[in-house]
Image (cartoon, rainbow, N blue to C red):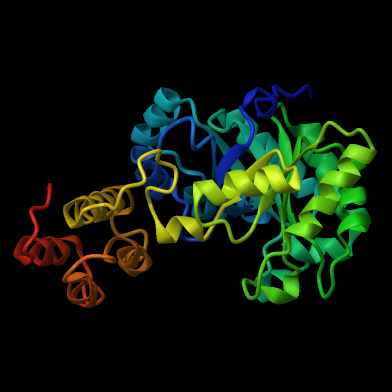
Length: 334
């Protein structure tokens, strides 16, 4: 199928929010967009979704929540002209073909990304995600099957190796299939999230792409905690874009031009907005405890934050969150 490629229309460097398990659902994406400037944030990704699960007649509905887009999120995407990409993972080319058809027919996503980078051991043992670095022929089959089924751009997110960096060899393999974009996380699978990302290896991917005169875009990922650092890395290492992962946990306003310190009222009001939208969206279908990783984002860098955070770690429902916020010394917008 012929792709409608939006990636080439975006201003470089392109800033994206990484796909993260139990993080980048429709609720958090909406929260991030609500405090972001559209010329700072260009593309969002879904949580990574199993192709086997999505294609399974019974299991399909159980994983479709990973690809859910709320009406309010859809409205923001259009207003801010931000693109959204579905990320999928698996081991069987035929399931990638089928899953891609399902996503394209749904028509909500602007692109499809193949996860060849997740380092989680239980996933790697199944032969998926970063395990595909060690199975180059299968990796190529998967990309080609996805492209064959897709009418939207197909990209790949990956790492630089398994037990050691094999950047040039691996990226050369991926470039043969002509994906629209490759995001290179500058760590090997064995590192998980430990140590520093090696951006010199990311640069090797850029050099190889340039040498081959390929049209594939190269994005870099790993240890970018400010927009300013993102611009510096884009310039220094020649990437077309920067993907932000853990940086969003340090600052939900990461993609905002205004870099002043956020007031306690702003932080706690955003916490309430996130918590209430999560509860409204997922009701009892998702564990409320998922929110506790987010509470840490909002309760920092102000007087009394530690006390509020400690209390929030004990809550189990929305009404308890409201009670804590109502009793704190700050004026919260409910």
